[in-house]
Image 1: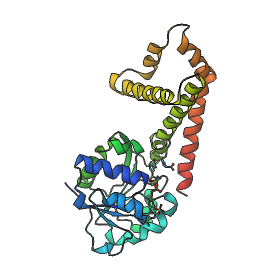
Image 2: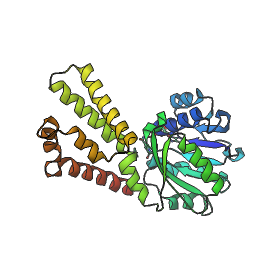
Image 3: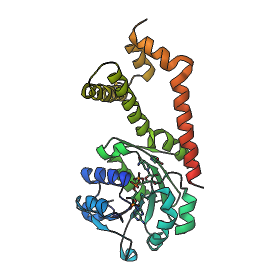
Image 4: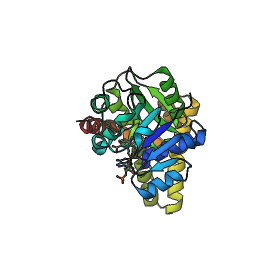
Length: 269
Ligand SMILES: NC(=O)C1=CN([C@@H]2O[C@H](COP(=O)(O)OP(=O)(O)OC[C@H]3O[C@@H](n4cnc5c(N)ncnc54)[C@H](OP(=O)(O)O)[C@@H]3O)[C@@H](O)[C@H]2O)C=CC1
Ligand SMILES: O=C(O)[C@@H]1CCC=N1
């Protein structure tokens, strides 16, 4: 099915997803209404050819198959009641970290079809990672439409338990920031090692890009790919002794993911 979409909030993540959908033709610009109070962001969305509005005035007169909620978790409970007139005819898809389906059911009515989705920003270039969980009220047609939309932005994994969304948030939702920080660290270390800033940036970025692509495309275990880089008693072994000694990096990543997962749970309270 080709559906009509209302996107509520078109900031970082909302806009990244919108671009992917439009670029793939999964939805036509004329079938999208963006509600965004920030004028600059609203105009940016409008340049994509979609209809825009600063507020949900007259929303009851809109026909929508899917209402996508992409506002911050902290404001979501205040934003949502205005969209109640569209439920339960429209399904609601939320990308907000932490906010449970039960919150949507309380505000919109217990008969509302709700899907939670945790995307990430590489969705802007069609290389996102989305985890989704739908309540039992979501029809097969809507699920198929959601799958088409999200697949335009990258890979989709369907979860069998809503609680798993907190883990997805901590791993792939927040994950790009961990990788960007690793690039920053590698770049800083490259400058310290005597390279120009320009060369350091390229070396750090291309190394992460190349390694991630190789890991995905070769089908090899990441551990096996690591071993292929590591000559006995060579340079990589020297570096890995620092990173892997006493599982230093592993423990740090564990701790970071756990902090994000706990924060995701907290945001829902
Ligand atoms: N950024 C990321 O990498 C990811 C974010 N998410 C989730 O996506 C959601 C949005 O995050 P993000 O894009 O980073 O945040 P942003 O602040 O960039 O985007 C949210 C947008 O919603 C707007 N907004 C505020 N109130 C309303 C309203 N009443 N109606 C419509 N729009 C409104 C905000 O405008 P204003 O600034 O004027 O308030 C802002 O432009 C969050 O719930 C987050 O958990 C999920 C996965 C990844
Ligand atoms: O930082 C956050 O809370 C959001 C959710 C996942 C990525 N960004």
